[in-house]
Length: 497
Image 1 (cartoon, rainbow, N blue to C red):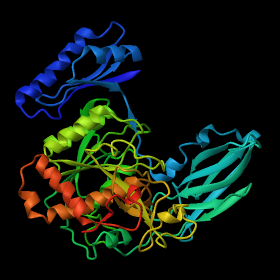
Image 2: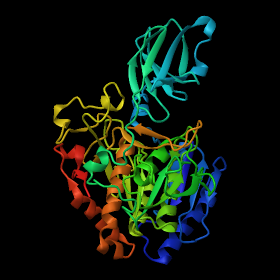
Image 3: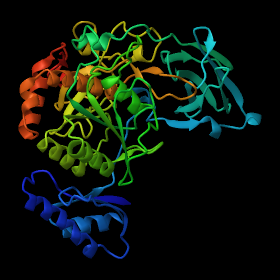
Image 4: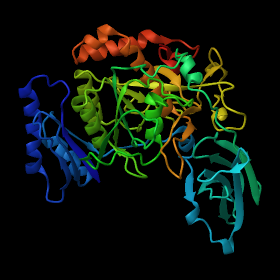
């Protein structure tokens, strides 16, 4: 197994304390057993900064190392965090099979799904085919449409097709459809166009576009990367991957990070397409996700340190989570608070308790709301309604069925059918897509808070310390308006600025 070793930084206000904490890691080399070996060692040139290691060994060796070091040393397992949007999170309990591992056509029954929009085939649309096996278990086959808008699944007779979910790459709503045993056609409605502001802008208090909204506030994003996209206003700050910093590899390896960045700071200029919630902020994006893998606790902690220390961000958006807490991440969040940076985190999409880091008391936890009538019938976004009537609130708002909840929730924000930028791929220029998740609610809330901070002269004049972050949290509470949901679902309510 791999595990992480780091020195504590939070609560060390004097240089002597910080140096002593860093020096406490020197003992690690002397207490490691012969079968424990170093995978990586990140040693910043600044001797006051956090040093992090990844070691490989057994559970007993990790426990022994933890017992042999003092309280300034953190030893914990390598914990991977996910970034899934609500759609993919719904499939997490299933066995997902890509089409290249399906049954050979000579022994299979082909099932084809044809996807179109505006009368034209949609290529590069993701198609998830849900089937039921003879033993009653459901499985998910994943495919991608070709230039003719077709995805073909070669299924064994052991599987009965149930329905499919079609996710166009850009420009159209994701749809659910029943599937026949041979060929199914799915027509995806186009996303609303010729508008900069949508319901999530209006419901958070923004009625007229201003590209300077949020100006003067620095926002960091820790996610899957940044762009490319012509409407993104911000800085690609590279990546922390495998406990190593690479300043030149911050481009998005998915589409999640670009969507988050666009939700906060999309700046379409003269084009009438969906804007970010706070297009005037200064945005800094750090990638912590490798392709097709989770983000480690050590990389997330290093990214928090970088954005709060080197870039002096006022807010950090983390639309990621894990069921298990990481003390290294908690220490980094607390350390960031002490230097004036507040972390805003997605509650997660498992429909259960708030996950980490949102569940840490030092973080701000954001749940997700949707609004009736804002997505077309049959769309994935329109299917996120709760089963409990008590989870329908005021003004057509509802608590999204995927959203985590609990006493840790600080606020709720729009997170269903949020339209924002996705990377320019497959020949697309400035593409946009609609996604659902607390991953989308989090940057919405972060952007609204950034607007409020930008308008508060007292906050902006304060030194970068705990008092500044305490005021940022207090400002968030002051701008929240209850939306008629239980407190464990909405916290103080929806931020409106």
